[in-house]
Length: 543
Image 1 (cartoon, rainbow, N blue to C red):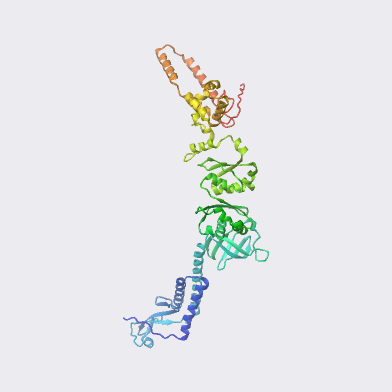
Image 2: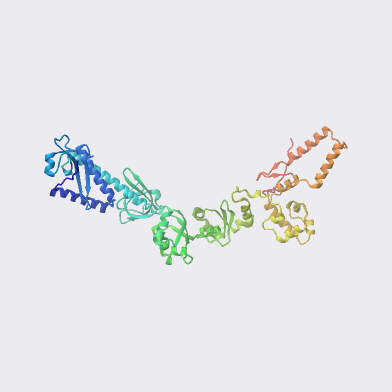
């Protein structure tokens, strides 16, 4: 069997069919920005669908598209002597009219005109084409706008429904929900002269729906401010200046931390611009929202200091309380306190979010009332930070020597070490007169040292631990008593033993008191709680 291609002569009408199809393809590419491959595939599927609707089978149909986008539809038919199925067969005489050399068993490609199909087939093909083109366009737009996520687009006010603004972006419609609008902008946009018609917003999300493409817009996202800065500041666009982080309370204030990749470029100055021209353009776009541009610093103290702007925090006035939990105190003057905290706490709350630290703002007087020094807090952070669970201040009983106390006078430590009194239990047992007799130590220094111990160490815990340890002399005395008992020199009666045991038990029960303020253990001989400093008084009630 030899395969032959039909040698047909197209009529003028048939040529016009191909030309019209080429025009449609060009129009789809130019107007709708659709992919050429997808359009050609859609055209082929449409013609095959119409052919199948007409002849109930498209296995013998073939679509050819030329380089000029001229489309032709052919039917492959076998030459037979007596036709039983006109869709796939052609009589020998009819075939020889098309090709004189045709023989039985050969195959011919016969060009068809889709306009000769019945109305139902044409309508089915038209619906298939429209659906395919709609899907292609949706996929193309989805891919295009998906790549623009977190970037800004501009469009025009179209309509508003229940606070949601619909924005005409050209080929698609954007949706700006009410929750994504700044409080300053409610009622600001509209189609008349009294309102702003052009809207710039951030593409926050792109979704496919049954009805089409849904593009969600936002003007409250901090990335919207970053995108505007990138548009207004060339140094940010070319990444000479980088935005480290940004936080925002929409309509009120934005904080943005920037850093420079070049030493000779001032990151903050580049964002502000000459005479504030650049930042004023950003403020105008945000309709007057306040913006704090600050320098990012790897040192957390300086970063926190910068983050609290516009408040003036002096250098060295940021104290790290616990590095593991990222807690810090910023000390400001009285006139800067309100500015550092901000209206309804907005400034310090934004600073917390920007830096990732929990910042407590205090005045110098308030910080002094805390009764804790920066050195002590840093020592606690080093001892109990890291991968360990942080503990409260009253649990610092691990300090056993005077020399370990934060802020202790070095001269006093030297005197105590020379006299073997560096251990805190040994020191507290000495009277003031004994300590003064050592020389080179004054009453004021002794009082200050006692106060430092009270603030830094829970002396009761240390005393209990010291009491539990037996000295060599006590151990020797206990051994002698044991030997004497074994020799039978002294033997206690059962009654006496029970009485002694009861006395000890009663004594232990007397010692088991808890402070009503902090819950620490206290004894009857204490006038002040060693943990919280509360005054104590004991009263006996008659049964």
